[in-house]
Image (cartoon, rainbow, N blue to C red):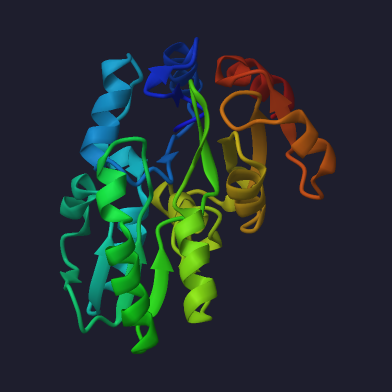
Length: 251
């Protein structure tokens, strides 16, 4: 979603029309996101407010993956408040946890509260007592109109280093996350396309389950990163506005 359909909450030119044309061509769509600062309903409403046709159920969030993976465990969650409702079904605790769950950051003052030193130290203490470390994603940064901003991957990496553990990534680029998207669409991964702006999270993750991929030159796209990368997309388009024509030519 971010970087492909929207940047800093504003739609990329041509995105609403591109989604309409994809649907008209018979494509089934799943909006797969690593955004962890808003609920599924809020994300869907944000798209609709900009003319992008989407049902709430078509939006797949990392909270879905967390509920599947952590159901039945006691969880210490460092996430934005808006996401808590989507974690319904998990037992959220302040101590004595079996799992520590790290969410994503944004550019609001709430990030300072969620990822305060005291909260990170509390998470470290739980890991030292045997809790497992999970993260909704491990993104290093995300693109805004002001430029790149630090994401929660830095906090995850810090906890991994301090506690000498390795986090389980629940969102992109987890193969299970992309497999769940294909399952929801009743689609063979080999016949499905991932459209994204990130070589690591989008292209590499999708290829891990056999999906094909198209990289857009918006959001996090960097030409030098494409040149250096061992993983390459099946195609590159200027933006999602050009995707319908590209697919018509290549399918």
